[in-house]
Image 1: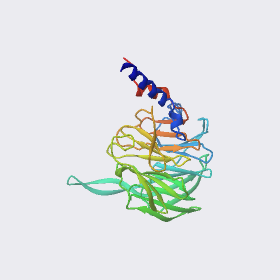
Image 2: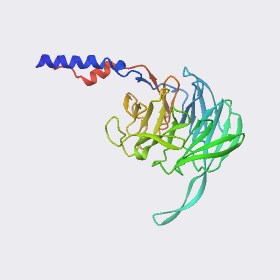
Image 3: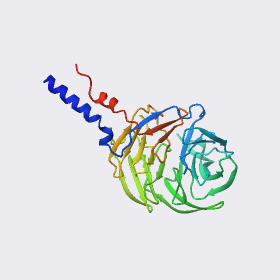
Image 4: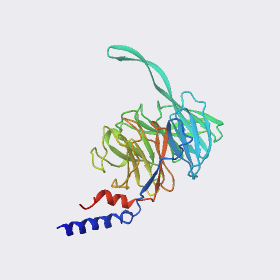
Length: 330
């Protein structure tokens, strides 16, 4: 029996050592926690990749930082926006910073009337990489901005307050809403994240209150996957995933909080890989912004730990996986 057990364990170790082959086309990742460690001193609230694979990092105080493909800081500026921007989008050498304008209103709380500040509109300021303002754009029809991307030439904004995704056509300093997706999201915790899909004019949404990832095309839901649970393929906690991103091959990266989990699903929603070694990036209900470059590297922002974690593809540690799965003989 002991001989048989040893053979089974050795066979399992040999099988796990072939993991990179068995998961052909699915990248394994090495976690780099040293990225930007010397320069990032405030909370990062948004990350974005431009057409040249350069990383843009927006800090909570309105500072925008630029990193080249080697991870070198190449420049920065601080936006003169009040309130400070909450998200950004980059396109054609310009940085679009968006802020939710606030207005005071009276609400009743526990039988008392209190004054509170609530989102009342979104302004967009456009800058060049040197920090010179190029335009001020008023975005009528949206109240808050939690995420933004350019998709199909349009500026697309996630509005948590109205639980919708709005598409804007830009012309100079003017913006006109062309359409929106609404009444299909179940959101909470002030979190609302999406990303461009792999198909033209498609978007992928982290519908965290429903524990689903949904893909929309032509404003209609095209596909979805996800369920609440503790299995690796499921989404755990009170609401997840909080953030999503798409790889070049159409695979979808999901990010969960409490505890932090990053997983990769294929186009059909089949769980293929988990990114390990991240540690806990946030505590409680908090977003973990993510950006992906053309080579499949992941950049995860932790506002609570004031850091960016870079996950580099193609660095599988199959030996560690084997040791975890097959304990030593006794």
